[in-house]
Image (cartoon, rainbow, N blue to C red):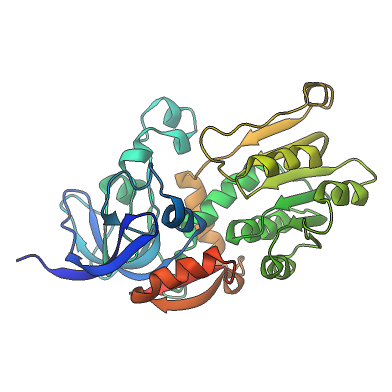
Length: 347
């Protein structure tokens, strides 16, 4: 008879249930991890509220994808890991051999879709062989599971900061001060930004942004963020603008906020089918650089983990609450209402 465990199962929009399910069976090259801590994220909230055809293509299905824990069982062929090791793993991995992998863009590898990991809101989670090979790492005793579980989102942020090409003394604007925005602020300051401006509707997030290192925060309900940034830069606009919301209107706002020959990083993923307009004269004669940035790479995963081990990220302002598995829906609702940053779920 299969072993049983408690897990949060996604049945559909607004319907997540904690129930008993079979402990996953692992195959060749795979790991079974006993979850120490799983974190809620904005993608979980979006999925809970409106679904996600890529992450959850079938229902019912396990839920959650940011986690760290202890190796419970090792599949045949696994050499680097053994039971009892403390590890963190991401939610996908590339193949290493396709067109995009060979050209240094493993974040665009088609295999990412087939290697997706879900089920972190549970007592145990199965890690597929590609993720074991590319994006699973041992973590030291000094790094709490709660902090280690930030590796995946932080790796995405490291990618975004790398593409932003921030220089010493730059003015950087970050639109959206959720957990991703807070990490973008931290790393922008580490890269040498002289002034970081953060814009967000939430008072909690604006206050947290100041703790993360932002020099100025903007409430877009009371002032125009574009005019604010231009006013701070003698009318030019910011050297680098990073959009971390994922709405067409804030994408356009980010471009408008960027100075001539500056860089706009569109980090937040907007809904399928939406579009934005860019003034062709300004785009051409202003020599704008507009970049889309998606996901992570194995290199950025390693760099993110090193930052966490070194204590370079203020994890205390990113994970504000701890709850048991049975309260995962409460945690998602709290995030949706803007009452917290991330919530640590401890099964």
